[in-house]
Image 1 (tube, rainbow, N blue to C red):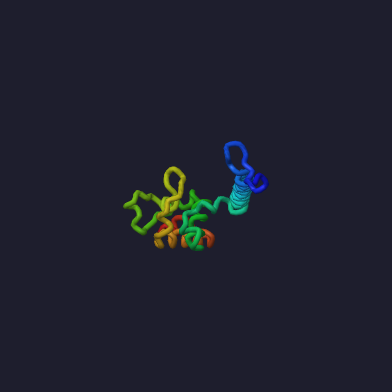
Image 2 (image 1 turned 90 degrees about the horizontal axis):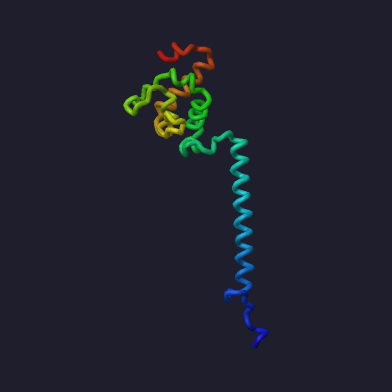
Amino acid sequence: MKGNAIKKARGGIPKSVIKLSRKILVLILIIGINLFNIFAVSMLFFNGDFFLPIGAQINSNIKKAYLYAKGNKEFLINIPCTCGCDELGHTSNYDCYFKQDGSYNDHGTYCGGCIGITLDAARMISQGESIEEIRE
């Protein structure tokens, strides 16, 4: 009878359960380390794009507009937005993408007017037009 009995550790927990629990804990630790590494690498290669609002992650034009706004604040604060978002307190096209505290504003993810203004302004400035010409 003794040979068929389940070996138990202190506290009455079978040793096989303790071994399995340790293996699961090690597996969870390995998965956590790998997820952290994936996150860290994505931050290096994608320059923080991982944190764009969800709409910008799934639509290339929205992503282009957010990334342009991110890198061209001084330009876009001089470009008015004519979609009507001034009623939301926006004073420029830049406000469609970023709040005063620097966090993302999701307004740009669902307003085609804002996106169009941003992409048009980016195209026009790259073609050599002045801010004054673009504002007209």
